[in-house]
Structure formats: structure tokens, C-alpha cells
Figure 1 (cartoon, rainbow, N blue to C red):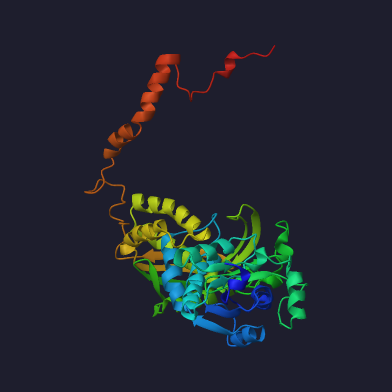
Figure 2: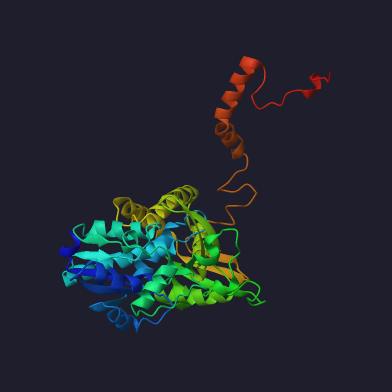
Length: 421
């Protein structure tokens, strides 16, 4: 499909710098085409009421805004939470998990409007281009994909700002404080600007969702999170919807400086990047969920779940949401969560999340089973036979070593036999 063949384009639109630049650029470079903007409300902390007018003023035919907050929380974030997926020990995948949802509805709008192309504002250096385009491919591979950052001459955010100014498009970014941010219910990410060098400490003025540990309250705050089958359903005894659970914990965690992450990560495209993330509510939920699983899951299930969590994180980070493997892993995770119901109490204090208790009707921890006396469940004398059998492979290796060389391979040499000249 050539540029002249494109008649209608649906753009994933936020109203930020990049997508504000793309609307007039599409009109210029795909002559005769109409641009429809799609904006997803996934809990970003901004007023979206002015987004449609801004899109139309930039040259769009119209802008479709869809409230996806509950769907995002229930069908994406809670699946992520239950899986235990964390990318490279720190990143709670806030941007990664949002992209397939946005792209899914972008494809739906394209089909409803009879569009023949979709477009996004992702750069050619990042991961998001993969996440959007793999979703397009999985849902409707017939749609042409337009990625302006891979076509145009704009090479920096300063260039984009100048382009918008020339075309009368108002933008909030400036060349003095020029962070690239992604904001949604789960997190707020920061890239660019001072963060271009990982040697720099992030400036405090950059943070928007969390207080600094220094300015956080001097008195700790306790919070209780209740789960049913692995999903949080109440905060401090108050039943809340999926969205409101996270929103409430964002508020509580944010004022205590919880959930800040400074990470140099390995991008899918092969380079490293430096980003800072604020995930207060998500960090609380991840900590609480782990504490509950510690008493509700048996050892083998818990340990194997930790293994698949690594793969789940890779799938989400790499944009492979719509894959049979992710769906299969979700089925495994769902089964493991059948007994993960109960309440966890956490203490929040100056950026720290400290466990303060956990209880469940399905708890596998039993004080009477863990005593050191001779009981019906555990007899200490049984340990001797267990250790003998458990260590049998090591015993066989040691006996073979002794038969061959008179000692085991782990025996330290007798240094007294060595003398100085």
C-alpha cells in the first residue's frame, strides 16, 4: 500500500508532544488521508476533556476517547500482579502492560471507522514500537502501520517542539525540562533530560507521584490489603473496585515515598536505557501479594511460579501479550491462585514497605506442625534417613574420589608440606 492509497488513519493519541506532532505530519505526508485520533483513559493523572478539541485543532477529523480504567486494572494489571512478573528485578512493567490494551482498542476503532492504517508515536529506538505493532499484527495484520519516527527528519524532542510551533500546535514540553513521560494507573515513568546519563542522580523536582523519603511523614502508616484468589478486593477493610484499589494505594504509598525505581534496563531492541519509575500502589500490591503467597502456596508451586514469572515478564516487556504461551501461563497462574485469599498488613515508612503480618484461612503455616518436639506430623528422628538419602549422590562422588586419589576433590591440600626455598 502506497502513501496515496491510505485514506484513513487511526492514531494512538495522547495529546503529548510526539502525537501532537504526528497529526499535522500525517496530513502533510499522506495527502488526502483523514486522521482519527484514539485516546485511552487508563488512569493517567490528567484531564482528558480537552484532548478531542486539541486533536481536531491539530488537523484530525475527530478524536475517540475511551474509558478503560477498570478493564486495565482487572484484565491486565491484576493478571500481571498474580503472575509475579518483574522485569530485571525492578521494573513493574507499567508501560509494557498498557500497550496491548491501547493497541487493541485502536484496532477496534480502525475497524469501526473503516480505516486502512494505524499509527503510533513510538520512536525507532524503543520497545513500544514493538508492543504496538505486534498487537496490530495479532489482531488485524491487514492494517498498514505508519511509524513517523522511522520516516521523518525530526531527530529530537527539540525538533518536535519547533515543528509544533510552526504548525500552531500547543505543547507543554520545553527545552529546559524535557522529560519523556508515560503516565497511567500503575506507574509514571521518566526518561530523557538529566536521565540521559545514568551517572546523574534524578532531580527531586522530576517526581510527580511520590514524596521524597526525606519529606515523607515521620510517623509510619499501616495499610491492610485483602485478596480473593490472588486479586486485591479491599484496602483497610473497605471493598473497592479494581481501579479504586490501585488508585487508593497510589495515594497512600505516594505520600510515604514508596515505589521509586531507578533502573538501567536492557531494551528489546538491543540497547540499554536509563529510566525512573514511580509505582507506589503497584509496589504495595506486589509486596502484599508475595507475603500472602508465602503462606498459601506450597514450596514446589511457589518456586516453579517464580521461574515462570521471569518468562511472563519477558513476554509482557517484549510486547508478546497476544501469544498462546502468555495465555497458557495465565491458566497456570490462575490455578495457583485458588487458595491465595487473605489479608496482609504492611507498614509504610519513608520509602520502605515493611511486612507487619499476614493471615489466611488457606495458610499452610501451622505452629503446631513447626514445633521442635516429637509430634504426629514431624518426628525429628526421621531427619537422619532423609539426610542420608538426600546426600547420597554426593556420598557416591566422594567415595569414587577417595578410591581414585585417596581424598575428595573438596579436601584442602596440606600446606605444611610446602616449604619456602
